[in-house]
Image 1 (cartoon, rainbow, N blue to C red):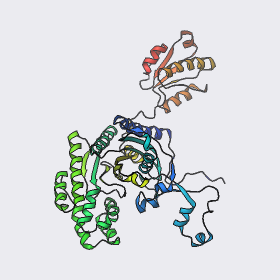
Image 2: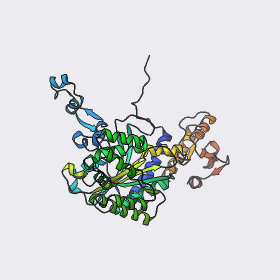
Image 3: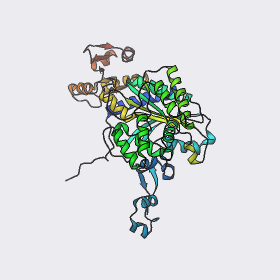
Image 4: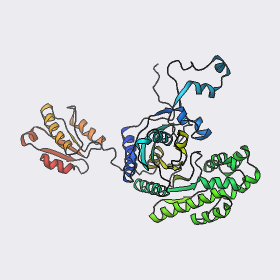
Length: 453
């Protein structure tokens, strides 16, 4: 018995209607990227593991898809290595490349590699797939697209304000109600200092980033496992439970962090960013969330995360400032800030809320019925003229029964069906039926083009 073909877990095929909907998302995001002055680049699907490892924290490194070396992939492994069965050690010797985990680290590599060709500040956008060896679940895939916008070579916090404005505009156009959560890595560093655990900043951020998923008590349990004292955990709790509006949160945090220089710097940056986006005006809810950490080691300033308000799903956009990311590639002192739209999760939100435009699956505006060889050839001439006028037109390729051809038009949601039979050939005209109203009448080619436009 022949086994039915399948695809790897966490990956998907996309039908024509799914692709139409995905392109609607990509086109909306891309249009706004261009509107805000970002330029498009692309990077390879594979990167050297030396480029990827160590940039996403210990948990991120575990989720990297590693590519086995071609040829004799065991040639660098000794008999002792194989006998030891140390998977990490063997993998490092057998694999030199990996699939990209995100678009930000490859972008940092790109900037360093092409620095002599770039004018700073450099604003780029990138829409490509990424891969993570994560456990597949609802809204989480092993292969998915990211839509990134970054600006490097500028320390100005106006860049953060602009990115927040970009986020607001994209979700307004997609008609998704969102809450934009904002924090600052310096505030988190300040918190670690004032609770007496400055050396455990990474452990703290990785744990509290899970607070929405596992709850505060489980976060506290994880912090205990990482070696935080009960006094530190008790001091952290009221900070994570902070309430009130944005101004009240900043005022409270300013009092808590007054002894921390880095923490006060974070408060100052937060005031500037929030003041800027409030001055511009926004539709989305902009909310300071002190528990927001995003768990990635390269963030150094503002942190951004977007949640859909009407659907239970994870983050649909995120980002932040990463002042020292290019330093690991030998280019220190270059500041950057960026965001990433999670296109796949945005797709799920639009599906659940039925927000996609109804005509997305319409590919052909007018379909010509095939009555035979002579009629079809004349119809092809009309189709050519319509296509030159920018109208999607098509002739049925097969001279099948009229009912079958009409059924094809109906299933493809074609708004107009054209008939060119012997009578129309003699009169040099086209009979067109409006599929919505059922009305049909005769048109010249010029009139038919105007109708379809």
